[in-house]
Image 1: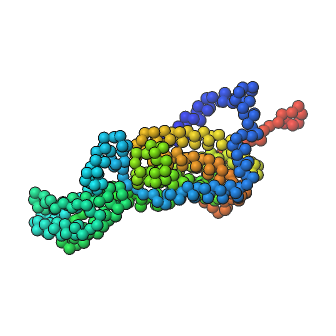
Image 2: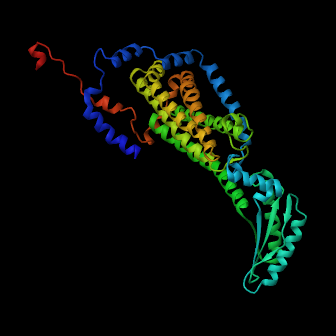
Image 3: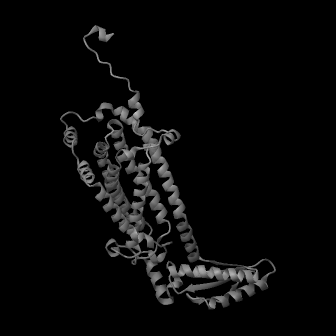
Length: 423
């Protein structure tokens, strides 16, 4: 809907407004534009970046890599009542159960034994075998006797781990139990499986963790292709994508430091410290990718438009920044304010998303797009806008800057008092 409105309603409104959008001579807007035409805060910032582009690139990249270090320890799990604020009744009940019966009592595992009609004896034998195997498995605080169903075709065994449902030790225990159930299943010829909310949570976390790499490859591949089509360049898409990955790494690093390691957790009012919700990384990557590419297009399209006219790389960087820096800054500040506001909800599901997106947008807009991008373009010079001819012929032309309209404009007719020239 946003794209549809931008391509239909917005141009219509601009057409209706017409010249009324142009500031009147002597107005405050006109004076402000005249005053900032030569120098704005954005141009002054970029001019300083362009004086020392190598140092800027090294400082930004190293700084973001340091921020991304904690992301290597990212752990995922589904949130439960233990993630709620301590003042909530569900959290208080969760803590009382853990204190009385051990942390694993809040996340029991279920071993299911199931047979086919007429195989009651096999179900009984498999259940007994499973109970014996559980007795020698570490990490189990309690395993109940097998509880058969009314028809004897199924049985269940409840297992209480020694650790909480969101811990790494419990995840490892689920894996060990599945190895045991596979052995018993092969030995007895009955269906044996590990289930329960905790086991399902472990499976979902593993599934989403496994989807991160393919998802990243798809996102990176699409960004490379789309930006290559838009800007007719090889270096621009690579630079934009690497910058996005740095922003994501720093964003995940901050999330791990706060919500897993507990840095500033009390200051921010984090309800509990532990693994991050399983759906957070994919959601954050998707949203941050969209915003990062928006900022990239805002900045680089203005630079390319200027470069297409002047063929002066440094002038294009400065002029492009002058025209788009305020847009990027305003857009970033709005999104940061929106995301940060969700930190005050004290909700264990939304707080990691809010911090990751707010911090990620800040890093991407100001460290990557407004600082790293101009520095890299300065070092590349004219090579930043290079695209092999064969590739230029293969890629579709979308003409983001509208250069074709300028090329097709007829030469202005100059009227003079000379009759011959009129003819």
